[in-house]
Amino acid sequence: MQTGDFLDKEIETLDLEALQSLQLERLKTTVRKASTSPFYAKRFRELGLRPEDIQSLSDVEHLPFTTKDDLRGEAYPYGFLTVPGENLVRLHASSGTTGRPTVIFHTKKDIRSWAHLVARCMYMAGVRKDDVFQNMMGYGLFTGGLGFHYGAELLETLIIPAGPGSSKRQIRLMQDFGTTVIHIIPSYALYLLKVMAELGINPRDDLSLRVAFLGAEPHTEGVRRRIEEAYGVDAFNSYGLSEMNGPGVALECPYKNGLHIWEDSYLVEIIDPVTLKPVPDGTEGELVLTSLNRDAMCLLRYRTKDITRLLPGRCPCGRTHRRIDRITGRTDDMIILKGVNIFPLQVEMVLMSIPEVGNNYQIVLETHNGIDTMRVQVEVDSEHFSEDIRYLEKLQKKIASELRGEILITPQVDLVEPNSLPRSDGKAIRVVDKRTVTVG
Ligand code: AMP
Ligand code: ZN
Image (cartoon, rainbow, N blue to C red; front, top):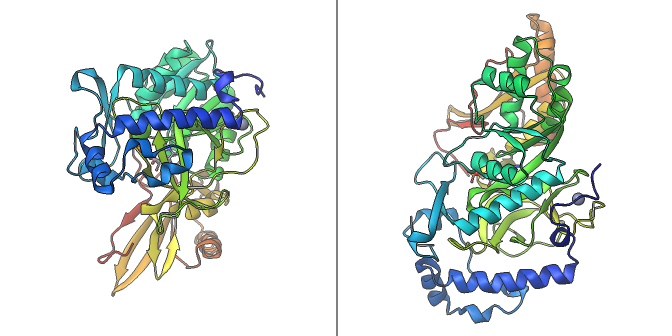
């Protein structure tokens, strides 16, 4: 384990007092800058708030929250800018498929700082100059591709800017250039295994992979384990969102006991999404982030809708930046069915612990005779697939009963052939809601 090795040792191991003093200095600057944007100028006026009112880190609670709707609302697209338009060099957008996207602008310095954070992450996972990095995330408005690209370039790693999809070509690139590091959406990593199997390639033996960055979508420990075992890699959970640059917000260190969130660049709060009050450390809630080191757009108390908690204690790796737990879902992903709250990842957790279950699933919500129901379509693992009806019925019952143990209702389980469910090159669509009247 390369734990003694840091890209930014001084920053990554700052003691608490020094880290907080850096945060406060940056918070004050950020609030001052934000107050010059039309959006926050108006908010501050309405709240009777002045930038000088922020004198300590706990004063952050006087600042207004910012939501996705704010970014898409009246202030769209330029109302958050704190620099003249001529200073902008790039924009990115969130990967939402409905309505207006949220658009984030960057100055040259913003891009440089972001690349640095990604480089810090990659270095933490052991990526070095002599690696060959295949970036299988979308290049374009989505931040996954270009975000990691610029980070890897800072490390002077050879980059294969493959982008997503074209599975056979991806495998060919890995073979031809001896790819050692990949950045990939976890659901796509599971799918790619099928294509490799068809080509008679066993990634553990036939490829040179050693590190995988898994990001962009919620996934369980079970999915990570499947990917690590099948590919023979060390897989790191990479968290980010376009509103806070993109990837490079938080990543696991080699201890994989939570994701270090770079507190020199992000001020972290965990709140109760209903009362909007902070929850005690260690308690789950909604992650709220304030960017501390950006120029073009300074977002204050951005409500990510992602659910996690701050983990207690220090990490043995020596980094002092706190760790967040694996994201367990989004507040807007929660399914309310028959009065029960269910997160799609609870379903995934159960499915991935059953060896007969393959690598893809989908949750379908429907209304029958006025009653809402849940159907879980589950691919059977190719090695366990059989035409034997009795075997399939038994498996179906087992899955339904294990799901009931976790989500408290018994869904209908449909077993389907391996690799028969729809898949996308981007984030997986885990829930299809066909209910006529949806709740939640
Ligand atoms: P976008 O701004 O389109 O890149 O989407 C960002 C969102 O993707 C986050 O707010 C999360 O909901 C999700 N996301 C990104 N990385 C992860 C991760 N490692 N685990 C769980 N969710 C993630
Ligand atoms: Zn650590």
